[in-house]
Image 1 (cartoon, rainbow, N blue to C red):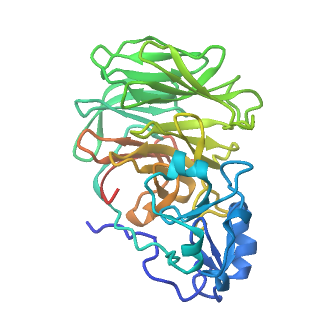
Image 2 (tube, one colour; image 1 turned 135 degrees about the horizontal axis):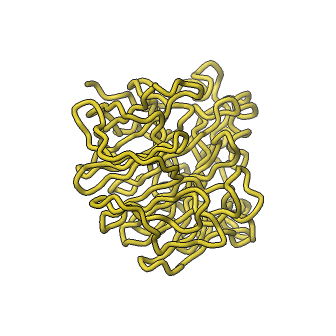
Length: 414
């Protein structure tokens, strides 16, 4: 089966990258490296990335005074370097916390044209469908893979929780429970943590006995909505005040606990006392401790991905890719995972896409899954052999008899 085509550009375009070459290039976005015409800059790019720095294409390589540029990450700091790795202007605090080891360019070299301004080369990231399964659910909202290769899958719409084995082209149900869950994660002892309706404490499923008991992880008086277990056995929980209606009017928090259920860290506000999250729907983490949160902004699943350092600094906020995510087709992130090389993979459900990000939330590329026959991708999980599982949902209004698809993808380049 042929690989799906990557959507990243591979050559310097002859025209605007947003309207596909119809108009002359006049501007460049420093952050995401897009080359665009004036119409696309005003009508498209600045609407979804209003904080990005835009440069007139004629001024690329001309004199830029770094200390006149304010750092976007550290308020009150002026920029002193250009990070060639991340294509952004940075201050001294940025160097210490984020860009240490990156290729940094001083003002004189930048103004002498020694910074490479051409678009990134075509990504060598590839995905291929390894296997396709028909499930016994109408939607696969959550997945947890056991060490023996079996899976737990949750359909919160139909209040179904299933333990299944994978057969040639279908899932074979071992156990089916009429239980509504809103989050799932496997612990390192191979138990399954789940969030059930109306409980402040997570439940624990023993895959051997399939008994459901109370766990030691309680976020009372908040209510958990998402769960992630890190590589060093910590449990990260997205939690809210009240019943989980978007947007949340009360507290919206990400809590980190140790294996005994003791709270280690709580992320709720940034250094300027601005709330970090609206609705932390799904969570993953990187090997260096960065916390990656799918944050839903409204009840249509329109959202962003927020990446925090262990200390709580915002390393990146991903709002979607300007090639595909507009006001009419907003970024709708749901499932999220990190690969063994610490790249972040996110499903964009309504647009049938996968977005690939760095461990700090910067865009690498995106993939059109519809071209592979995959529509409405939702949940994500890594298999025991290193492939990626994608659980899909059906279009709203589909009959109850319509069975959701589960795909197993091989990948390379991330």
